[in-house]
Length: 447
Image (cartoon, rainbow, N blue to C red; front, side, top):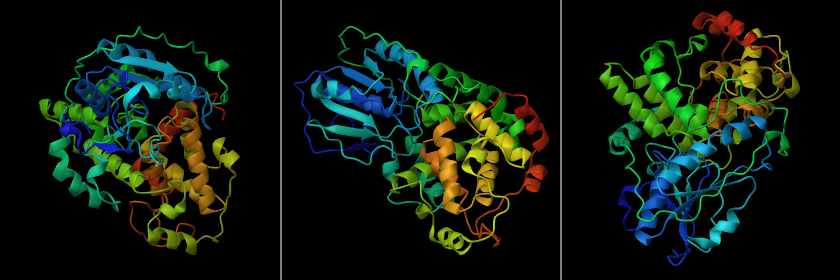
């Protein structure tokens, strides 16, 4: 590890035992999730390492058709941010290449070192290269490495995070390269989503556009319009009081660190309280990353705590009525107008409001033939349609519906001691009719 980078010591993992090779051409930053020049510890570490070796930095990103859930929605959202990322990196003196197919092996042999994002869903295999490979955590504010084990819930991780938060809730230092990347900028490839060999039945979101500029715009809107009412109205979907930043956090267009700093500073200047928003952004989100780091598989009920697995096994044979197929769930074809509206929102926007997503998941459990079938349906829908899917936060939220990071409740059919949510409770707590009317105006939504 570089001797000039002590600030990164808690964020960096060496993925192999290969050496640095300073006689090569550049330090290579392989972008996995963090598609931004700002507030990016992994990019900053690559630059520090390159400065020590007196080399430039080259960033590599790709868009691959062969992903099992590749579709127009995800391709478009990723592609919409590429040009701005390239522009900002090159302004800093950092090279950027982007490919529509896997070309990483063309660049790795020329790298003095490889730096990549420490993303718990993608770091299960060792880095098989002949050069030192580092994974750097730029997804969490308090680094994942600071947690020694899987936490039981927010109540156990919260005090640990709060004890360390002041140490890490600080801006990433500005990036300054000593040696600029001097090769001529490579033009971006032509992009025609209709020519990609992907699933064309999932259309781009009607509401979310990808890219750093859009992430910045949404953050500004949240701070100026919604932060002051977040605590009061965050669980009222028709109020639109949330940040809607989860797709941008997932694709790495913005960091939780810069969002937290912006919310904290704006709240101080305007005498607001941002505690509830920061609880969701930091404690709850980093609880999910802790779960992903210490869990081999997140697509199985085996990942649940013992009490939840035991109670679900006890009620595995309970009678369900009605029972819907996956196709009926995907098509929003149930008897429940609120549930149908949540699924239609997923189909059209690529995201469900967090509070109603809990209800969405609970009803899939209630109306599926088996608990494991319900889990598979939830994961399939998020993997295929959700712009914030395929994410530690998403998998943890799905498994929360089955008892993860929760506590036992009074026993009832199908759920056992797992928390239940019903339509009448939603009507008491939220304006269900306003939400359903809003979703119905979208129209023309098909799976």
